[in-house]
Amino acid sequence: MDYAATGQEALSRVESAGDLDALESLRVEFLGKQGSISGLLKTLGKMSPDERKLEGPKIHGLREAVSEGLAARKQALEGAALEARLAGERIDLSLPAPEQPRGSVHPIAQVMDELAEIFADLGFAVETGPEIEDDWHNFTALNMPESHPARAMHDTFYFPDRDDQAREMLLRTHTSPVQIRTMLEQGAPLRVIAPGRVYRSDSDATHTPMFHQIEGLVIDKGIHLGHLKWTLETFLKAYFERDDIVLRLRPSYFPFTEPSVEVDVGYAFEGARRVVGGSGEGPGHAWMELLGSGMVNRRVLEAGGLGPDEWQGFAFGVGVDRLAMLKYGMNDLRAFFDGDVRWLSHFGFSALDVPTLSAGVGTPA
Ligand code: DAH
Image 1: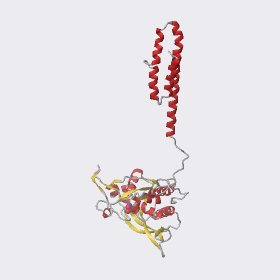
Image 2: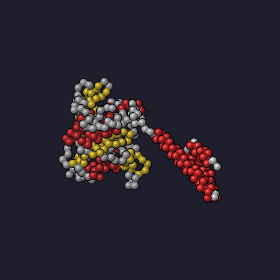
Image 3: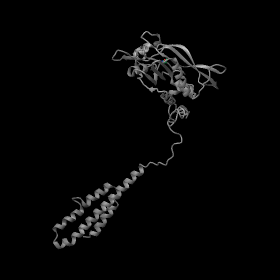
Image 4: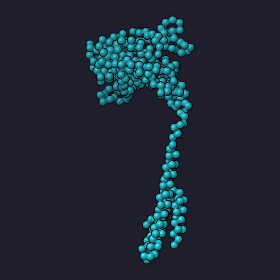
């Protein structure tokens, strides 16, 4: 038998095996239990010692050569498969970043971050509360019992079901219930802000059914209106990044504060745009109502579990959307929630533009 020819034929078939499966079939065909070369090995047993001496090395040599050929081809095929996979998974780190960064930080998120930064510097912590509230936290504990006329002014969204304490459930109409939750959970003294979503059944160019507020609450001993005014002035100067912020405090009424103060800020027209700053007096200048505030009502302190003879405090509530519009010059509140990518890319902020007091809390992107 011409082992050399058999070997050559086998090796050339192994060489041209296109993949690992084809190679495995060849291995079985040659070296498997029923394989052709295995068959040749079996013939050795029936040979005479002389014959075996002559044929044995040839057959073993053939088996060795084919088995080495199979191993070499296997390695080559596996190497090629790995190369192909690596090439497919390659990331070209030298590719340039996209010219236009996709996605941006919404002005409301940006302003919330700016406010948190400013108040953190004044020692305020950030608190949150549920948007699905009960009427006790949203109204009763804030000195608005069931028959209180102020309840009717809030255009509240109610849920059909009550909670397990038989409290009526609603979408919170303001962030003020977080005052109650924080007092009950943490006691006093307190210095917190509570930013978040609030809901009222109202919709036009300046009202949306969902909007954003930020609540402030300070509880300590010997707190008075002077602390409130200084805090608001300091906050607004930092927020609008100018020193000529002039506030006008007007007596007002909120059930949860006594006395209550409505705060106006002076502004001037620059073209059609209202720019905050300067006293509200004189040609081209006017006052704009900006926020509600006051000294925390004794009954609210009591609802929060605090003794009103020992503790005093002030509170304020501001519309975040309005603060954003005033600083960044948007005029229609509804655009905030339309999700129009042109508006978002125009008014949005870079994710890398983190507000810090040292770098400026809000340089437009
Ligand atoms: N909760 C009031 C509102 O939504 C705003 C407000 C006014 C909050 C006076 C206060 C405050 O904390 O003292 O209209």
